[in-house]
Amino acid sequence: MASQRGESAAPAAATVKQRKGLDKSHYLYIAVIAAVVLGALVGLMFPEVGKSLKPLGDGFIKLIKMMIAPVIFCTIVLGIGSIAKAATVGKVGGLALGYFIVMSTFALAIGLVVGNLIHPGEGLKLAPYDPNKKAATDSTVDFLLGIIPGDIPVLPTLLAAILVGFALQKMGPQGTPILKAIGHGQALVFRILIMVMWLAPLGAFGAIAAVVGATGVQAIISMATLMIAFYITCAVFIVVILGGLLQVVSGVNIFRLMKYLGREYLLIFSTSSSEAALPRLIAKMEHLGVSKPVVGVTVPTGYSFNLDGTAIYLTMASLFVANAMGTPLDLGAQISLLIFMIIASKGAAGVTGAGLATLAAGLQAHRPELLGGVGMIVGIDRFMSEARALTNFTGNAVATVLIGTWIKEIDGGQVERVLSGAAPFDEQTMIAGHAAEQPAAAPAAQHAQPVPANA
Image (cartoon, rainbow, N blue to C red; front, side):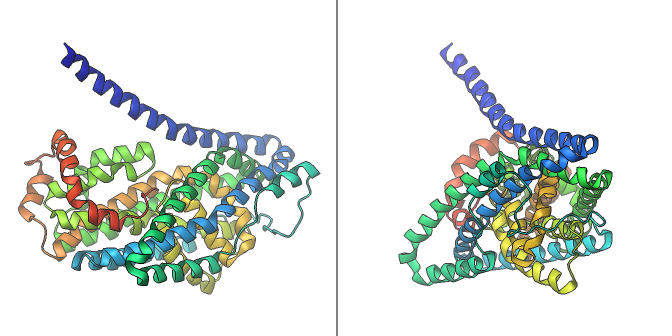
């Protein structure tokens, strides 16, 4: 009887724990959706009231700006250290990092191409952001906005982070305590960022109400255009680019692989984060026939450095903001922005809000007057998070199969048996076996994954 009570209590506890995790993330998601809808209604029905709510969006943008420099500094310093460590594991680490850099750059370029074709945000002509200009608000609003610290220049921070990262790398074991301290600092920074993101519904409400109040239905059409274009671009990238590469190199059909990962897709879609599926992806790639060393290095490294969906999002969102502000970026500025995003996007592998902070960092570094348009992205960011997470996850799954094929560490017969359904994945084996096998793969994974991946 005691055994029965224990068995019945365990699933109940697991259910409660899972429900609590889902509820926490979904509350913010639902609140942002409600805020966007309410903001649009206020802007349409009461334009002047909507315009007066602009300080809410401005305050949220200032909070995001406050976090840009700490996020960039911590992630770049730790990222350089992790690259050095991952490369030492041999051919797998070097090949994985090379592939991730190429694919991330390619995804960024695709985002720029699509953005230039559809011109999202064109015609809105929002007022540019001027940090030196006093807003026409009362003294109370000025006082509250003045409490939020000013921003730190991004490019000097980036240079300092790169220098510190390489210096710590040269220090060897002496630099390990400093890296650990920076890792703890990064955890603190992301915790603050999570707290800031819980104000996203308020910021989205004010920003959307102000934009819709000033531009009317055109703002809603422009945001919908960006979201639809982003979803289509991610789908094309997965099916054509990743699918074509997978078929040519490994002879594996992308749709069969995606069917095999169906449960993980549902998990990611419900949480808007690919992090939740990391243990399952490791177990499923091993079951697919890819060797444990390849999986143990490629998957965790990819979760930090192979963010294809985030890369597409960063470039398309940047062009959207520039067009919305009536100051489109020329080719030189776009290329400069692409180079910056190649580096800074490695810092977008943290918690919710890190991608938004990276977007703001890119705009601040190149065109500070465009920061005012980030408020519109806040309103629709959560609508695009699922596509980002699904694309990132698929890119890492494909990368694992490709790298296993290139270094001949994959069992082709097992791949066919698994994808055909002859060797189904055992959920209970994954749960029991993964915990036992985790320590063996942990050293490579820990070296290669300085930050939990998120959409």
